[in-house]
Length: 218
Ligand code: SAM
Image (tube, protein in one colour):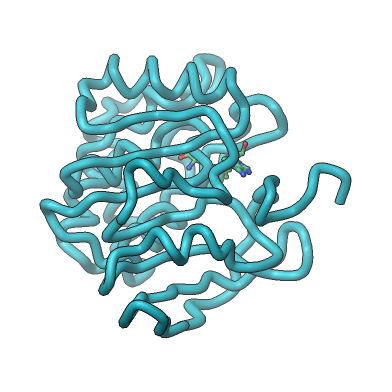
């Protein structure tokens, strides 16, 4: 089996840089975060494949390129505080933690949250806090955030997340009226009551389920 470090270098060159992600901070973070530590043991051979992988509970660890695209869209700077909604395996949180000072991440499945917390600690990430709960409501006690990344698709932009952005903060979220078909939006808080919206293109995510997302019954 190819060494993880070499697999990562190839992933960054062939799947990420080649598709137009050019922020050196993001490329460096992707070449450091050990994706194999966040992939189930029976899928180790596929850890650096160019696709999402199942992690249980009908959920996935996102495709590496999508993680890179979303993290680049956040325009993260060292020293910033980030919220992620949809911890899943913990991999995207690890990539964020390579750049930001502090990462707060919320997962609605208790078992996934517990596993991600364990795997993040084992991989040496001390600047990530994992919480089990409904991430559509954000993490008010830790707000405001310089950046918020939502790793699941929502029918609308949750108002609570907009309100937990610092002025100048960026929210990157897949939004669309259908399951598995959304547009990636970047919402920048330009003032107390003003927000700027950009459409970054079509994406495909599992559902964001919660008070300000899809209801469980949808
Ligand atoms: N970022 C993850 C990774 O790196 O492995 C992949 C995230 S996966 C595509 C989406 C995750 O969002 C799932 O684990 C799902 O349980 C979670 N999720 C869905 N709705 C949520 C909510 N309201 N709050 C927190 N997590 C939620």
